[in-house]
Image (cartoon, rainbow, N blue to C red; front, side):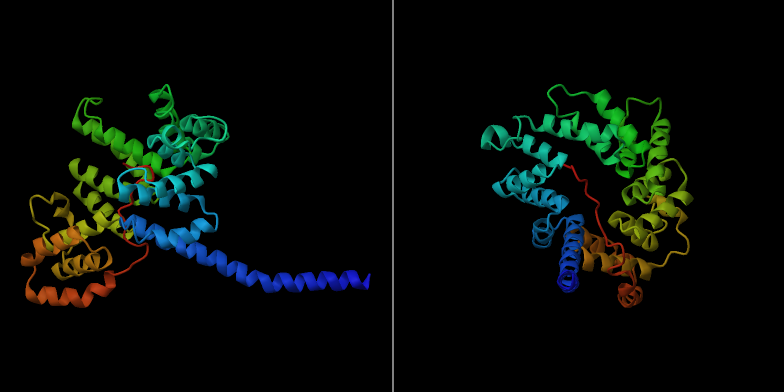
Length: 333
């Protein structure tokens, strides 16, 4: 009996000693994933890979998929590295990795096939349909893409599942329904009717906290001649880290009366120095041709004194939470 108790205590001591390092590894992998996804959000496809590899090696399937995306985008096609990461993600049940493998002809050209067949879209469908029918909103959303890839594409079935995903609270699906309505120039009697239909879905997703929907809602409201509410959503998109929302906020503080920027007409108390500070912070956080162009375009609209004040204010706008992002689609071009 005594030996059993001692063995139990020894086991508990060993567990206690092991747990902190296990937690540290888990925390490290999560932090690495967050950094990799931050870099994904600003299109840093090379820099995002080392941190995401840490997460992928710890078993994170989403990290595997995005490593496939990074390599595909860098090589502009299904490179061997992209194929390897997609295949790992697919083996762990990622349906979009399966569709990427199908797109690249992985089964036909490289003999990288599903375990029980040669049809990646069908494998994705068989995996996701039971989950969707059981109420999984992510699976419902995935079926929208999958039904366009199966041997007999079914647009009606795809749209049915997209709507069900949106109704189940899936914000990306709400947003996509808004984009579909906004871009459907033949399905509505007028542009106003089309934009009003888009507004419904953008608003649902925006109110649920989805930054791309906030940005699109501000644009739709501006076209519907509702500048005050449009300006409110510009600010919310900026606060949510949407880089275009932050860019509009900067531009409207510098050029509130510019005819081409009609949504700026409701900007309250514009501050050119603040706008310049925001542009400087964007360029520091997401350097590139776009941020360089903004500084060049708006420089002459800001006095030297305002530029100097903006430089002093820049730190207020730098590296805010959440970080700036373009919010690229998971299953984009």
